[in-house]
Length: 109
Image (tube, rainbow, N blue to C red):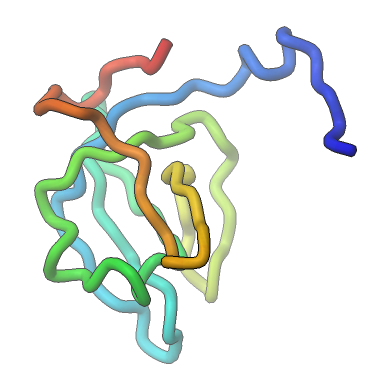
């Protein structure tokens, strides 16, 4: 059974729209991509295991949803300054995004 959390715990996470500025495969990894993402107020580096479903050259310009207030974490020796939201099924990874063009930095509510 899934652990239940208090709403107050969930409310601590800030989700924002982010626009991928650039992306490149992480050397030595089959699945990691390093991205520069505009989160409205700043540019951040995110590292995510999405290369098998999203070639880096197809990512620039995509709007994604970012957990923006996570503490930075080292992934494969690189600092990841947030986390993108995605789902995975038998067909692979699918990024969570918006259904129309929106500007970076909007708070998800």
